[in-house]
Image (cartoon, rainbow, N blue to C red):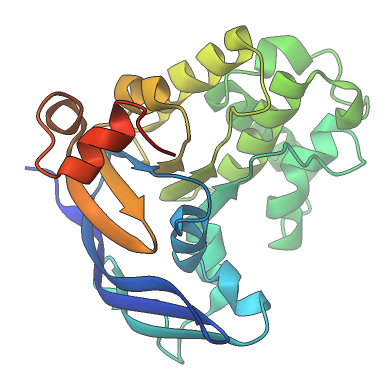
Length: 252
């Protein structure tokens, strides 16, 4: 039985007076891919960013409720946010490689965590690139700028960069929305491989992608979770009429 990795109870988030997340309660199991679906502006990305405290960087944010990862409340005042973000990596919608070489992009996290030995960095870069299914494409281009790679390659370098610090959870905010179908398929194949060792939470607008890649699915609407279940069940027998309407394309 897979243990729950993330336990969230009565999460409310306000941007000033805007009540963006409303009484969200959800348990996310480890070594699973959980997709968050719903129309634009319904709170999916905001919710994702609560899991590594990225919303802390925004003014006038008020967060109430409990978010526990491995039994620890990540909003506890004693939590080291840098350590949390090492444990909970994030991949954004637009690939965002640094304007540095491929090697320096992937080595960035280990370097800022104090690793200086070239041989160890080389080992981590190769291992992370292999895990991100990009090694064969970049092994002869490690000293070239990551900006010169294709969009799909850049996104996988960003995944390698996140993997280089050995996270336990990977948050993916529409990681394939700007990519062509072949690159998208590579990212999806990679997710299947990574979930053996990681817990993945993905925001996607693509219903087919959610159905293909995720084990569990949460449907967000107006800042609330309307339905949360095994993906296969949600897509074949949704319990809520709003879920049915969204999945069948009647709105959103």
